Image (cartoon, rainbow, N blue to C red; front, side, top):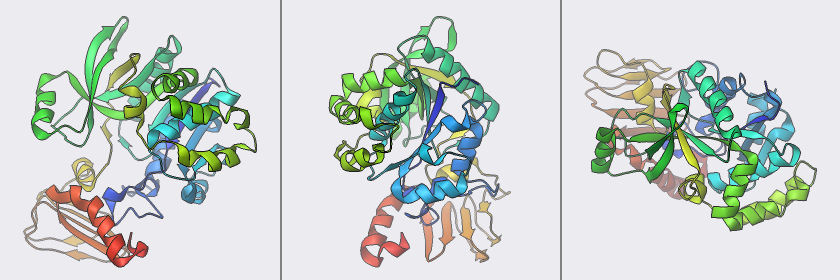
Length: 361
């Protein structure tokens, strides 16, 4: 295993679309959704360790989650947990991590992963990352992984495939990115065969992504460049606490990927889901004859079809006549919601916070 291979795992999100299971003090990346005894974050680390040395796994998170990470991942060195003092989306997270790694390993290759996705085909995942490292090491290339769409999802970003890369049958130049299309456009993307889902998994050289920030997001590049002498020293934490909140809150897609001309996509089949919502969890979960999903709970559901039931605790659920519903009970909150209205859950969480207080979110 090559010592210049690194992995950055982004694990600072709030996961509010999975309320009331995902809470502000324990978001979804730290939860065991499948009863395996491993959280989504732990599963992410498990699948990258065959490719990247454990000592080269960097976790970027909100400062309030550092204790949870130390508890769930005792094998990761404490200095590998980078704590953001404020939430600023994925671009500042990636820019900081790349500068942090480059300070001690200038020729580093970095795989950047979300912490809360599902990957069923772990051998294929490991090979995709291996091949990706080889691809980016031979040129100034920013690589993302693309998933062939199976239905016209309006919540994902899409990548339009461009020209083939010589010698790489499954890798293409990126022609365009489109964020969260409307239903008609999503159907067109699916039917055309030219568009893949953007998995949010990136591979690049540290030097190349830093250069891309300099070219396409110069203010952010300058902000983190100003701390170069502090990275990988005891003074790094003080520099970040003083400066991180000054970074623009923007995704890596908007800040760099949609602007750069050296972006490529590797098309892969990983058994992937972003697990971004209760509906996404329903889609990948085993179902009974009525199309219902029960998550680690006991349910009596006469006349219910196409519904998801989840309870954290010993409580049983008794429901009748529900069609395509989400029923989720955790602690001091119960959610009952039509599945086709789950996009409203984020607003519901804000309303609950305003009306009833932080203890319920």
